[in-house]
Image 1: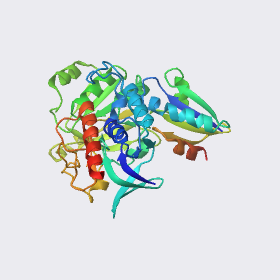
Image 2: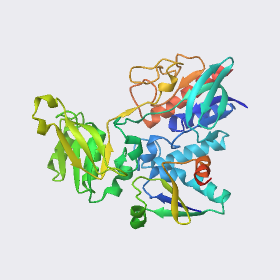
Image 3: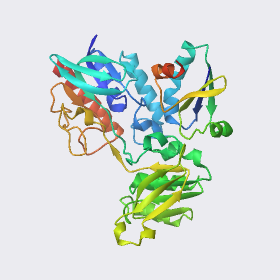
Image 4: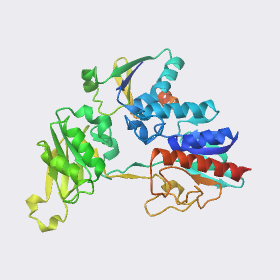
Length: 82
Length: 307
């Protein structure tokens, strides 16, 4: 399973969510978390149709299985990948 | 465990209350359903917070949150669904469970008003946005619609017109509530079209926004063909004001006709044991410093109430 974390440096909610993402990574070393800066990786944001951030896309075998827009708590992140 | 005080909302009012209550050694739980930090985290530069010229909203709120946590406040990211009065205090119901409290501070702030159109929630983040500075960058060289007539809508339209190919500014009156100077600036922009007096009627698009159908106000006076317009757009930016999300508290305490929780400068609501701080209180000035001030007053009121 893989988690794409779409963010930007100018996005306040994304920055407020950073500590939670770090916590999640620590608690789930089995899940690969990739931070995607939407200003630098426009194609990726386009590919996944992301138009509001923070946006978390959950991939399983490369296919999207879940997504959440807005700030997520650790509990909500864990529900997304459960 | 029963907390001395449960604070609903982790914006500046709620977190300041947490700091004061912890310094009085009260046990504190702060519940936040959306974004810790509150509205101000979308502001890149703050110039009216004394002592820290130009600080960003995120930086300021991260510091305040850290301060509250280091003093021993607990913060949980859970949406509150209701508060019930019981014999010796309150039960706070959240999406994940229940918490007991001897006293409550409501610091829920205000949220963006919605259009109340079908599929609005479903299309939020898929073209529908309530924050031009947050999401504008996704609409580079694409047409967008801005809805509203106040300064926020005008600023949004101005900001977006530098990024996007075309801005349709939809407002229900021909005149704007916002500053004349802003309206004049917008009139000079070649890629801004005023669509007035029109109101949104239907969001168009399957998986994402492709446009919006708008209806002329008093449309019975015009020819049938002029009643509606279909505006092609990739984004719809809603800027029609803010309101407090307080409906769930209406049974417990007095609200005014706009939904603000009625309380004076002492932050006491009509329900003993429940206090209110920040933008969701009936007040005339809604600023960072006044929200912080409310937080301190509400915490002191809680401390007096408990002792």
